[in-house]
Length: 205
Ligand SMILES: Nc1nc2c(ncn2[C@@H]2O[C@H](COP(=O)(O)OP(=O)(O)OP(=O)(O)O)[C@@H](O)[C@H]2O)c(=O)[nH]1
Image (cartoon, rainbow, N blue to C red; front, top):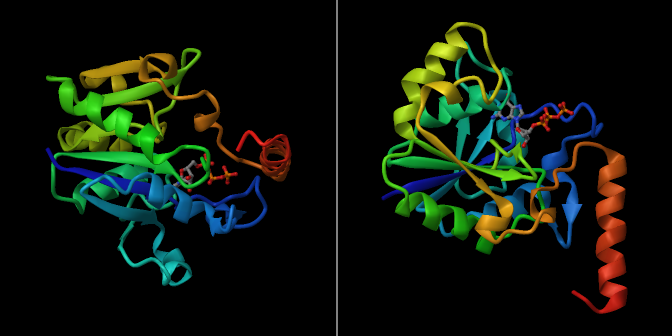
């Protein structure tokens, strides 16, 4: 089974105040950390808006742009464009703003998806809250996604009732809760940096 890793980096970062894909994290940038977490996928691509192409010239892989008429429609528009422009069986998405999500976490999801027959999506949850941006979707979801986008519904979860999907808790996956922390604003970024410094000082890192 061929799984394409896709780092979702086409957001507006309004709450963060500057493009969060380029926020620095332990010597690299957020989006580079996400790319590295997905490196066991068959290919890793970046999902971006067309007007961001020049920002990511350092990235050596393939940039997949959102497609008309679903540009700037949020991550569901990004997933649609990925499915239209990708071969293989499935796409594992990871937002660019989840820097604690590690390669071993991605591998756990991939393994479970490969061993789960007859599902079209595998969605992790943390205390019952679904994490649809760090999940795996079969390309067979495309017609349903298209239908929802056409109807003007851009919510990531909108199409779940119309596909066969499975929720798996972070505890069943053996992934820490923190791995799913996403950084939306400067306050969360500062907190993340403080926690990392504290762990270094405690010698727990
Ligand atoms: N390809 C693509 N990715 C998106 C789009 N909107 C959001 N994303 C990505 O999806 C993830 C979650 O996005 P959010 O944090 O909810 O939104 P954001 O636009 O980045 O930030 P805000 O403007 O503060 O809401 C991030 O990794 C974004 O880069 C989009 O329209 N296209």
